[in-house]
Image 1: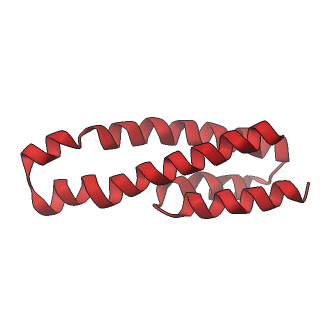
Image 2: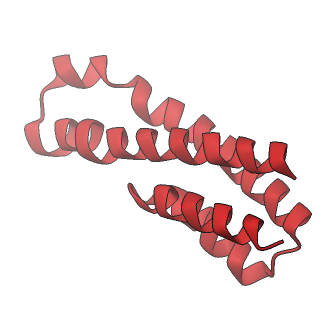
Image 3: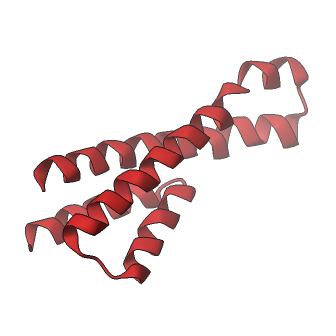
Length: 101
């Protein structure tokens, strides 16, 4: 269980960082500033975010299966990876839930 939680925590951090980069770097450059030369330099952010989020979902489902979570909790934790700070919050909640097992 410890290794599953460690993988989940790493993916929460990665998903959170990539989400912050997406929301506060790439999207403003693309839609607010309209600077094509800078936009080309940050094109990697949504691509990497997509892959990191996919691995985050797998890590969440893996933890949920091991911890025997209810489906609604799984959905909430999966959706937390889409908001900039929510994955950091759910990482702490998952750690507390794992301590109670």
